[in-house]
Length: 183
Ligand code: S3P
Image (cartoon, rainbow, N blue to C red):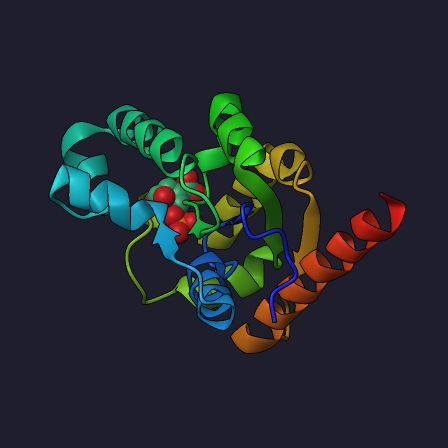
């Protein structure tokens, strides 16, 4: 049974490799909710994969598309959203997502993040770096202030996707119970 506020979206934020898409899909399945991955939406709208958007149109164009998509999907009700790692850099994006539901930040160390994404789909922000772990560390330092504003923080290291999904669901349920008892 789901006791999490049904109208509120569950929004996952965090760096590349933190597990937003896999965890989001699992949470959606467990709660019988719709799942939306903002990067997939952007690719569909642009008609090409993200690395091509970056290389052909530039990061600015990607961020503009991302902003349009975040605004749109924040209007949905009761869904699970996985965002691209940089989506919350824009305060307006953060505000839209924040108003749409609970924001959950997923974390892991740069070393673990890199192990998870190495050899998988290309991440344009890391492709021209000799030391991608260092690049992830720098990106993490730039964004940690935004990630810290999430309602919940979840460490994903040494945990299976299913375990992380359960942890997020129980955090949201406990929070709902507290609200319920206080009102
Ligand atoms: C980005 C993360 C990527 C994708 C794009 C930019 C970022 O998504 O949106 O390459 O700025 O951190 P994932 O977090 O799903 O890898």
